[in-house]
Length: 138
Image 1 (cartoon, rainbow, N blue to C red):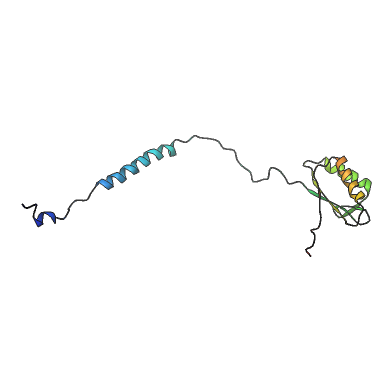
Image 2 (image 1 turned 135 degrees about the vertical axis):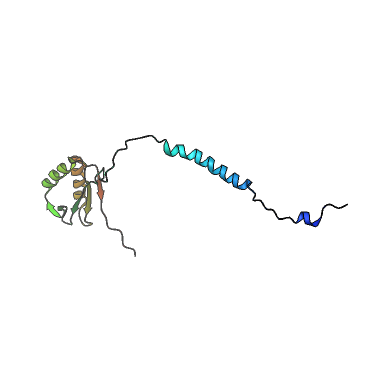
């Protein structure tokens, strides 16, 4: 029994297989059908214009120093106790309130620093901080 001759099995295929090409085209068609309506049917919204100006201005920083003799220095200017209370009240009334940074000399009595803190609290300042020097490594 002969199953076929050699000439029948060695024939060259003369046609292009169209099935993979049709599959790719159908996938692309589905993608375009889904995405085109999304691109064309958008809701018209009048968006607000943004500015590049900061909304919350950073509060000013006041440096209050107490030297070794117990004298007060307001931003490198020497002030008396009465002037200090007046300046603190004026700064507490500002909006936004400034930050108060207290620097006390290590030789000054703590009482003078405590008096400055109490004056700031009585004036109504809410942001009080202490400035110190880092300890040197030994």
